[in-house]
Length: 135
Image (cartoon, rainbow, N blue to C red; front, side, top):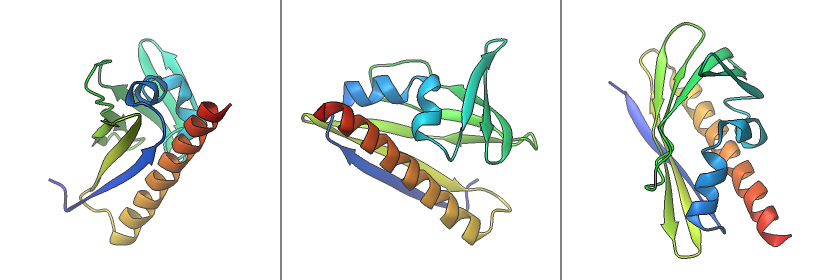
């Protein structure tokens, strides 16, 4: 059970379908989610990412029309973390919401830094997708 939960969100001036299509492709993670992956590859049907925490395995929710980008990350210590993420339509724009949960044994300062990392990743996603929209 999570000790604390926070929602990190950002508005993106792109349709939800565009945001979802880009963000749901694991190969794009290194471009916008440095907090999770500097490199990712598929090995024997599993996504393996080089992360700041070491090698992690990432399992994504199947592609869907609801904007659900949930994923499970298995850390080097074997712990699996569930990360709920949604892309929510807002007219011609969208909002991306990442639910971050403080795990058992995680210090408040670590949780704060994790939230900052998620916010930076979402800001990078916004920058990439809005830049594409303007060109």
